[in-house]
Image (cartoon, rainbow over all chains, first blue to last red):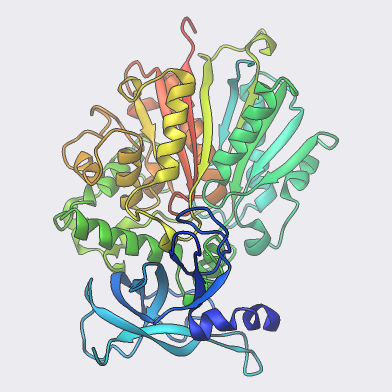
Length: 133
Length: 388
């Protein structure tokens, strides 16, 4: 069930909360308390805007257990406006062809279901084509 | 530091071994290596394995293998570094003998994939990426390689089928290896017609997960049995480096930094340069890994590694033969065993025992075992000792 494990990550999963470095101003996601840019201590919380663009993408047909119900689905590397890159599913694509450079924004969606009808549903961030500039 | 030589090598065929349990598979390779060494007795066993705990519900594998091989009492440990587990186990064996703390070390790599299928295997493989930020999104290693490949094709303006040569080379070479999973050459038209798995990767761009085991017996040259008659191969350098675990955390997505670091340090330690390498057993789980590994090892400049698959450079008669006994695509990719297969195959080349795929007068081999997208890179340089 791993309830505590997912609960601990709620601010990252629902709010895209990372960190900002007080030394070099780098924006950090996911939080790691040490700045990957300058090596300094970085524990100041920072909520990302959720805006970014597609850096690369692919469609998964052979999904892992827990995701097979939703296959095929599209996963992307999304370059956030503030700098960091995240791995995330793309959603609400409709007929729109995905391309590198496409502007996207974060939304909250169901990521996976753990086990049977009593299993936990895991929610988190996905990205959809940007609705308004 | 003590000189370390490969006294014994052993391997099972790579494939779908429904009838052979995990432990028997490993022990077949271990016994072959011990026999090949002329009867040396190991003081330690380092077992490279990636997923036995999830695929076979078996942890504590090193001890199980030592026990069932009749070696109970010796030091025995499992070494795990995802796809680089085999290379990492070899390095542990090397460190033990090179340090002078042990006289002999047995290294085995083993993986048994075929007891599970489809979604369960994909889920097990995905545990090697960042669980909270990659695999929770449904990312698999194949999809991760697809993300990397698309960006590589995009940034370096690689033509369609620009990476096809890697699979073609592996399949051509697999034809000469009786232990390879696939022993038939394929044509470019076959590659072009293959089903898309995770675009832009098709079926032939993905090395097959398979069952297999390979083993090495390491020792010092002065401890070799009198009846040892094989040409002698030494480990000229051993190095390993790490990078970010998650692909999305890379400063430069298209540069295998750990591969570059470990190769550069291995060159430096051994005094051997890229020009002196006679063959390269790279970790081409996906063609883009092959291209980036060639770039990281100094055989091509950034963004041009794919070209070496087009002009014959990596062929058996080329400047730098790669995947000489089928590589990961045609020999197969038995997870934690793969890095040990690379060492066994390189040793066969250096001993001039590689059969129809023999590289004439091969003296120096570079082998590299990768975990994830080169999140771990373990690099070894093997060299045939002069006069042997």
